Length: 273
Image (cartoon, rainbow, N blue to C red; front, top):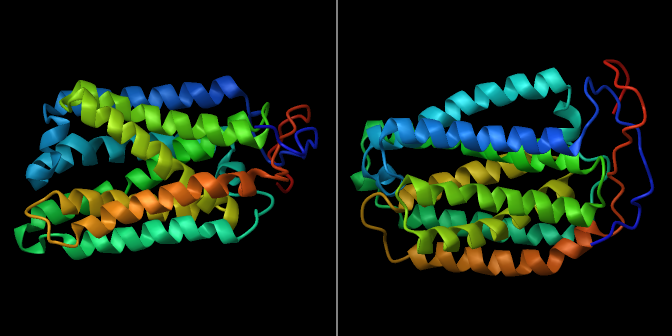
């Protein structure tokens, strides 16, 4: 997993703090600790989140709001907004087929949702849940990815940031979910993380991955509230097909990448990325 341009160091621009791998992992660990602590204090098991609007808000929405505020402060203090949200160059375009397929699977989830089981409280909590697209993406494919690019080739950047994204979901086993479904979730999340990474590389920005991620989680929790319709299999099948294609296509978005960050230049608050 080497990067064809791993020795091509490019300027970092207006970064207040030089990217370092340990900073990325420190933020990652801090995020997981905040999420786990608030979730446990809520007293709502992970498996009961979809039971009611109250459960979804206090078991998930609350920690998303708090962590989103903390992450905005962190990124601002580091001055990493631009490298966290934007790549210097886009990859080849055709691998975007994988994110598009996941988008179609998302529509399948929404079509299979039992909307009659919704009340105002659950819908409001579900909207808050979309924040997960910002918090998890900026933590892993934003800040951690930026930190990793200061030392590693893009192949390792994809693998480590995606593995970190998947492994953070192991905490669900400590919050009431059985270990078997948790391991399965970690595997599916690694697959989804690869799709989100491809979406960043093909569009040149993390913003679209945030949107797709947030809406995907919204659709999954919507589907598990009430009795899913017969189209539920479309969402599940579409996710797998998109994931398989992503594993094939990811090498093409990594190839020729020129995203290494030069950490020898002094940090500055002026200039262009």
